[in-house]
Image (cartoon, rainbow, N blue to C red; front, side, top):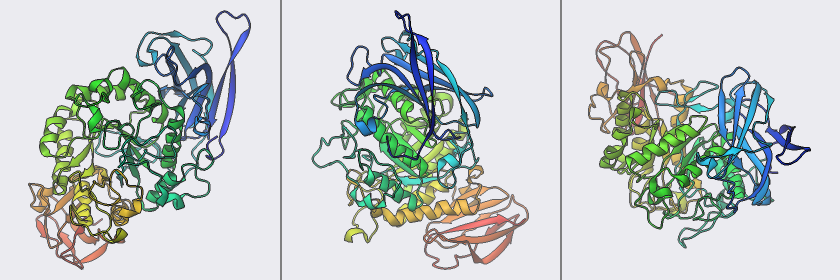
Length: 620
């Protein structure tokens, strides 16, 4: 058993009669977990014996195991895809065969939940093929009780599932708070970890990770598997949490790509047979992330394997949503879709055709019972954005967000505010984030004092703070993830020491704390650069506004600014926030202004040539 907290569970034995037998047979169903609201609840059924390598029937394609979970009130009801789980404890045993079949629920409500099992067998039954009910498993039903969550703080189980609610920010279903993210986009090879079963390095210059620098961040009581494996990666997540970050991303399939060392299959090219123990071990890491308040960014494909241009036959169905891709998506959703905070990203620098992207997004939409955010990532130049995003806006696709790459860091604010506005005008506001910065070779550099590193290329950490972090937030974006590039130490391919970007994490934390501690209603605010004489949305100054009530003016280069309050009424207070140091708001030389006209905001209280945020709020 994986070393998680003790779990409450009960077992239901269901009698049925097998075809050809006169005596009753028993199908055992186990309900396990802490049986609380928003916590993972697992239904495990003793079903047909199978092995990962079986061909006929193939346990991944030829069995359709699905469980419908319904609250006693009738709402909500989730039709949850299940999966073959080998012996039910494969993370510890490395088992490749068994008779355990599993489905996960993260229940929204307290009270009684009912379940009903659908179990069909037939050629490609899991992918929509024909199939017949498999006795005694099909049709079994039961119920269980869910108590209130007992979690607090960063643990997402204290706040509920992050949901797309038709706005530019996700909302927690429990607390009703809105979410801003900041965290790590690198290394994209996050899951190329030596402690995971069946994980191998195919490129000499891209070794598997040990995450050794973070083994000391593992804490007593944290999960491991197989007698202590996993401490480095679990410790790395703990480090991000300690720095105040709340997101990390990872490729789940990068065959043919830069790393060529991550896939969920039993081997790189066996796309119809999945590695049960490896995926269980991935699940331990993802569960720990949820408990530590980490948004999980699933990057489903990489540029080299996302579309028909891929070499070496690594693109599933040559970019189409055919049997390979459907099974891949179904398996990931079945195993990890219960996580409370995640998005499905069609692909890093996606090369699918527009119709292929639409089809993939629609399949995810139709398969994921929880309706998680669906985004897409393009190449960073403006032409790349224009070739893709306009054809996916509104009802043209099931996308609900965009994962932006910017070729040049100075473009970030313009790109973010543009797609925020364009998506709103199309009738489906997107959740827009900046998840990859600058040219592929550079990205976010290490701290200047990291390992005596002397930076000679690319944007500085201060450029990242000004243009990527605050440029995104002030454009109405929902957050950032930091990409490390190839030219710096701890690069995107070999990074396993997140301390290399300690100061950039600090700057991001200061921003998140500003919005949280001062109760900034960012989900109701919108970009208003025109009010600070920046109609072209360049990097002179940015404005995010709740008109008539609250205005945030960010000055990347310090100095003074004028805010147009012609359409506002009343008295406004002026205070200043230091993005370089965080902490409390500071009064400025100008304490207040009367609305009804453009008003000068004055100079910062100190260091007038540095970046500052001006907070202009209406007096009660």
